[in-house]
Length: 192
Image 1 (cartoon, rainbow, N blue to C red):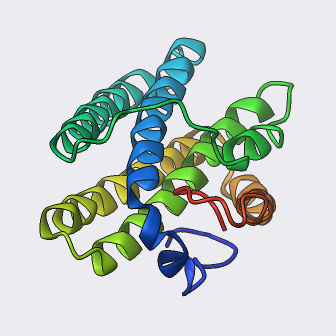
Image 2 (image 1 turned 180 degrees about the vertical axis):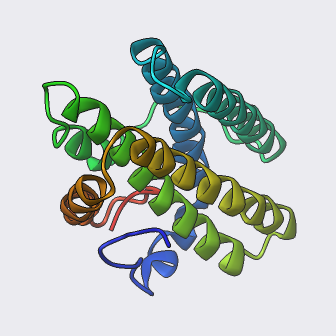
């Protein structure tokens, strides 16, 4: 369903388990970036069918998640500090073609793949964290990220032929895995 080239390594959670505070901080920053990405596309592609309504909903939901992350951090006494991000998103954004309409397609599919990886990671976290409140939160977020993945891919299919969407999604899924591997050893939500 999520069109990832490869699932998360079984050892990923063990590798980040002693760094959950860093994962929570990273997650808060990622929610903020997800809202910003959706808002930016909403401004850029307002005249496209379905974009304003669907992306406005994504912006609102991502900001709600950011606020909830702030609450979780505060309740745990963890300060939202600046953090070196994993190279993941930067490398994926470099795959976006410059000319329209291909740029629009790539932006939708890169956003979809980021949501897909987040969805998968939230499932791993929900299954493995000992903190029941946090596990329940990640179960909720799993469902939300799956919806966002579907929303972005459906918008792509609304504006582009299915075979073009599928071929580009395959290419970008390979790039997504390479981007994930570039963060190996870094305790982040989108690291290998």
